[in-house]
Structure formats: C-alpha cells, structure tokens
Length: 96
Image (cartoon, rainbow, N blue to C red; front, top):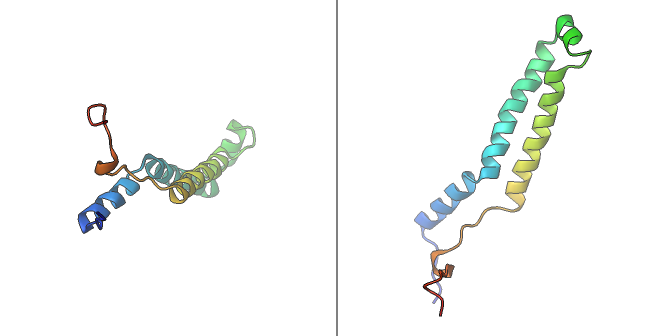
C-alpha cells in the first residue's frame, strides 16, 4: 500500500529540516561572522593594532566564522535531515 505524503507531512518535514541543528549553528556563525567582518573592516584603529600585535582580530575571526558557517550550511544542504517515518519505526515491543 503506497501512501502519498500530505501537505501537513511536507510542512513538518520542512520544519524539521529548517530547525536541524546544523542549520541553526550555520546561521549563527553567519550572523556573528558578518558582524565581526564588518567591524574589522570599518573599525580598526592604530590602538587596536597595537593591542593585538598588528593583527586585525575581528577581520580574521569574521572570515573564519564565515568559512565555518559555509561548511555547516553546505553540509545541511547536501545531506538533509530526514526524520524516520512512523511506520518504519520498530520498538522493542513491536518486533516480531
């Protein structure tokens, strides 16, 4: 017996994919990385350079965070989360 997924099933699957932990982590790294990158580009003074040993820490940490964000987002897009279907689950008391 073949059953077609309903609209409700499709929306629940989309929500499960949207709130996959890889997507959440990737989005947070994207936001924080963009903030650090912009801060590093706009607000880097000679005093900051002296404190950090001549390294623009905000710029480099922003670039690193954007790279990590890209890895998480590509990972979640290439291997999406698919929750198990209720009829395929077999618990210890359902085994025959």
